[in-house]
Figure: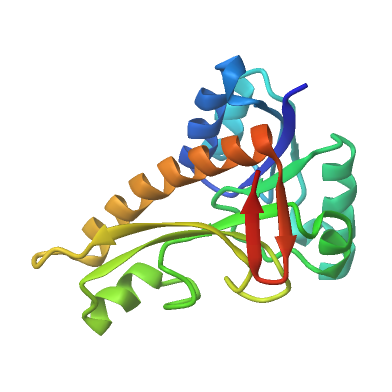
Amino acid sequence: MPARLVVLVSGGGTNLQALLDACADPAYGAAVVAVGADRDGIEGLARADRAAVPTFVAKVGDFTTRDHWDRALADRVAAFEPDLVVLAGFMKLVGPAFLDRFGGRTLNTHPALSPSFPGMNGPGDALDYGVKVTGATLFVVDAGIDTGAIVAQTVVPVEVDDTTATLHERIKAAERTMLVDSVGRMARDGFTVEGRRVRLG
């Protein structure tokens, strides 16, 4: 049976689309069984609809507390019995209730080579610092910000004439390839998380 993926999105869903395209090949070893979002009317949900994948929305503002939202989000995800949860441009931090249920099998990407340049402006921070290479990191989500155990990294050279926008676009392209390759390997071969080490296969 293919590994069951629930993908959470907040925007355009380009990483989601890359996963949907990969999952169309039975040899990939995974299937997107649901797509969740924290807001309505986004292209990520439309991509899921076009692929006939079930969707759900859990808006933080619809709940009395952030913890209530976190528990509700976990319930919605759990209904689809995922083997892996992929945060694909999901712009909310999941909390303790979510990690209690899906810790160790929730993945996220960061547009920098962790542990360098955490937070929302990884490409710009890397450019400002003057590094010659940066890249993207796939990690297992923990309670910190971009601090989880590293699954994979990919390197992107910084060009002399780069702006934050041009650098970020190249990082995103490399990130999609890394995400698809790594999720496929995790689905087909399994993985273990031992402290800060993630072993595939």
